[in-house]
Image 1 (tube, rainbow, N blue to C red):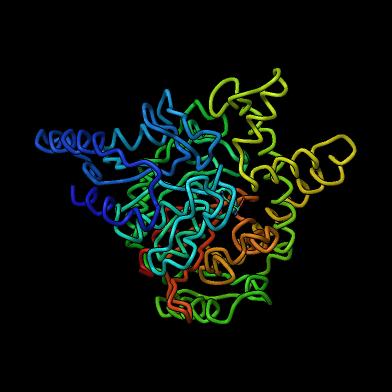
Image 2 (cartoon, protein in one colour):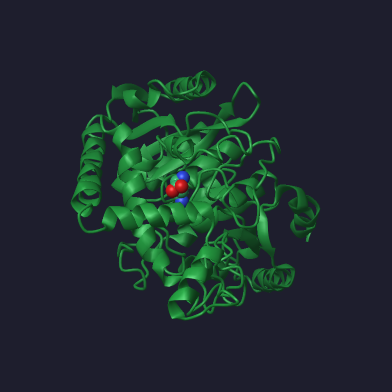
Amino acid sequence: RDYLARIDALNPQLNAFITVDHDGALAAADAADAARAAGQACALTGVPFAHKDVFVTEGLLTTCGSKMLGNFVGPYDAHVVSQCRQAGLVMLGKTNMDEFAMGSSNENSAFGAVKNPWDVKAIPGGSSGGSAAAVAAGLVPAATGTDTGGSIRQPASHCGITGIKPTYGTVSRYGMVAYASSLDQGGPMARTAEDCALLLNVMAGFDARDSTCLDRAKEDYTRSLNHPVAGLTIGLPKEFFAAGLSADVARVIDAAVAQFKALGAKIVEVSLPKTELSIPAYYVIAPAEASSNLSRYDGARYGHRAAQYKDLTDMYERSRAEGFGAEVKRRILVGTYVLSHGYYDAYYIQAQKIRRLIAEDFQAAFQQCDFILGPVAPTAAFNLGEKSDDPVQMYLSDIYTLAVNLAGLPGMSLPAGFADNGRPVGVQLIGNYFSEAAMLGAAHQFQ
Ligand code: GLN
């Protein structure tokens, strides 16, 4: 009730929630109390919580930040949603996001921009900006996010919270509205690495309904929280500290490196030579997959349908023209172009080759270190409106996060300090496949 009251008081200004489910939350809280009284509580039973509005929730609106799904009430729960429900987490509502998770500032939401609670002139980051702002403002202790090219890590960094994108295939994508299926991965956003570990225990695990979900034994992500950092080798990729990184973010990252060193980590320089190519590769592959995934929104099956149309083709065209926002249309156009006959080899296939080289760069770097450390974004949160007219500038700010998704690796952001303007700055850790437990441990020791 306290959290619901806080949402009612602060959400009108922050716009972090698209839907608040008062009745459902109170019923879930009663059920959690009953479970606790019956001695059936697990670690997270009764903890208030929110889902990014990309996760389908049975009987509750799931908009994905789009007018296209502005009236869509899910007929089933996403795998992550049912896992969280079974663990007794009390969902208070669905958080705002960039439309179809396309964006880095949350300004692409059909439901309006989210404000950064540290400074309401600033963006909260995107696309999981609603979840990040909600956790940072204390509207919920934790929330889900999804990360296709940085959408958990970058808003976590800009809002001063902790978020982890697991190894691709760790968290089922069943019921998670698809943006770019070979990159999309759900994960937790919370105050601390310890909270993220507890949540990942609930979210991760095999689900046969997602063909890319990995059939691995269930693991306990809290198991390494108390492992010392001493003995770990941390690699600093020189390309992450080159031109383009702002001086105040560099200062915060340097201090984080010094802290890891003080904890006993060995620091080495590594190289990820293809870093710059992650931007063109990602912004070919992600729109290509999006253009295919978003073809399902035709006005016929579900979602927005134009009120008036002449014939079937006209209905498709009007429904899509009205339902999608400008950035989504831009990505559909780019994606359709790079997949078209005559351009496929030159763009899409080329990008896939670069993707493999990027993954190989990481494997070479992990010969020399246990974890890679670097910035999450080149600057702290910029002002609302500052980059909204310049999509390429917005894409360039994803330079440090995209390669992790292209390679399918786990990565996380943890709060590390503040920029000169007082806005939070996170530090990024990148690990090899399935190193989440050890990475959360290093983060916990740092915190
Ligand atoms: N900013 C990137 C994009 O716009 C990443 C978004 C995401 O991770 N969902 O595609």
